[in-house]
Length: 213
Image (cartoon, rainbow, N blue to C red; front, side):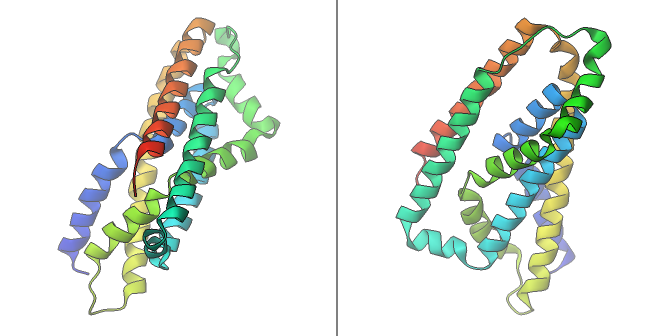
């Protein structure tokens, strides 16, 4: 793989990762509600699933899903159902007014109280809800691989690069969510935010359910 090819991959990945999707929305909304620490835990969950899915794609699962559309459709509909469930949960989340003096302490106490695993699991499930990531990797990554040299080291470089760019964008979205936190102390604003994010998650679910492999 030449340096020019690698830079082309970096630029394309930068654009692809920047596109708002369920992962980015989850990181931003988690940061807004529960703070940066909770958002980082969600990021870790998302990246775990993404790295696993991309690795499975390299192992040939992408070709398997293309060969058996029924399997892909089943995974796609299952993922859409989970995103819809998450959207309904966001929409129905209870809200209360939060005094300014307790705002800074609330996120950390929530995470310390034992919700880290829940945040991590939610991030992993949201990222895993879209099997198109496997097909995307199967179609995208090979374009940057040199067939005349060993494939595994090249794939390792591309996977590491993708992870760095993706995480960088996660932090951009998390920082945006943190800025929103100042406006979410009022119950009316938090309720509107929950319904907006819940509606967007349901919208992602509808798009995924309607999509074809």
